[in-house]
Length: 246
Image (cartoon, rainbow, N blue to C red; front, side, top):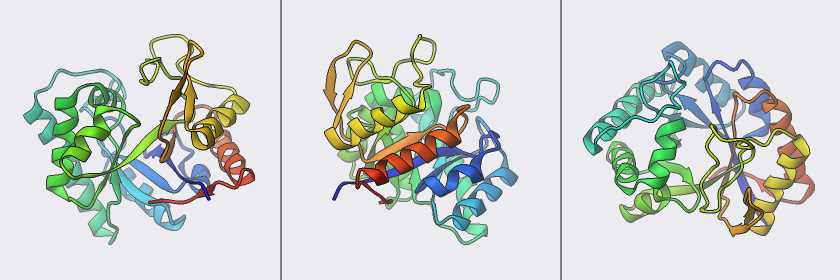
């Protein structure tokens, strides 16, 4: 039986976290650098506990002004420290309510850079492994994020995106370009089922690429995030695809 994890970026101020929680298995919670603060982290972890959803850290560049979506040119050491500091902060809050961190998923520009830059990917993976070698890294399927983490023995989950289009090289279409987002709920469901069942994705030019889908991302800040989450959950169930975490 096919199975898949569903994750969502949360604690970002969208106001719909609790409405989405019943339809996901993993929550990526902002660490305060691009969104949220200590109080929001605490509240979001409690929500995840209520719905039996795995708790993950969602580190980013220190950039609330651009919601962590502006690329920054930082060294290996700076990236390592950036991730480590956010994990320390997040872990302190999680420990205070007796919750363990399950996974780490970089956010926004940090995520995109690590997908294409092996050195940055290694810095992130190394920071996570040194912090806690038992954590999972969620990274873009087929990218340096996954390969560099595996090369140092860190466990990974290959991530695909429910509401984003893909380029011919397997990367996500930049948000600055037209058609980067999939905004039709029926198209989102079709897109997810193709990636999950057929292990392929159709790019913006119409090419079919092989893809490994272990976890599906839904962006919690999308205007139709709740509808997308519910639709994806129901579509997977209807096609006898088990929704479960790692």
